[in-house]
Image (cartoon, rainbow, N blue to C red; front, side, top):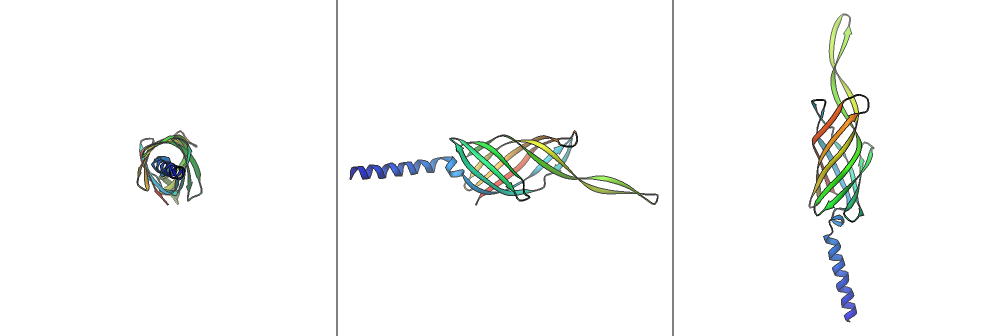
Length: 167
C-alpha cells in the first residue's frame, strides 16, 4: 500500500512539475499575423499583413524551435530561449518583400502622363525580438534590419508586431 501511494504521489508530483514548465505551456500550434512599418532609405512603408501558422516545439531545456508557415506559401524557422513567460528570439534571417509605388512618366502623343507604378523589392533581413505570453496568446515585438537583393537600399524596422494565438 505504501508503494502504491508513493508511486501515485511521485506521478502526481511529476505531472505537476511538467505543468509548471513554460516550454510545455507554450508548445503547440498557433495562428499568427504580422504587421508594422519599416523604413527604407529614410522613407516609411507599411508591411503587407502576413498571416499563417506557427508551430512551436521544445528543442532542449529552455530552447524552442518555431516554424512559420505563411498562407502565401513561404516557410521559415527561428529558435528562441524561453524564460517563464518571455520568449527571446535568437537572430535569424528571412526575406521580406515590400510593395510600394513610384511615379512613372509616360509620353503619349506629345503629352506627359505621370502615373503611379507598383514596385516590389525583396530584402534579406535579420530578425530579432521578444515575445510575451498572455494566457493563449504570444505578442512579439520584432526588429528588422537588412539589405535589398537588387539595389543598395537598406531596410530597418523597429515597430513590427506579431500576434500568435494558440489553436
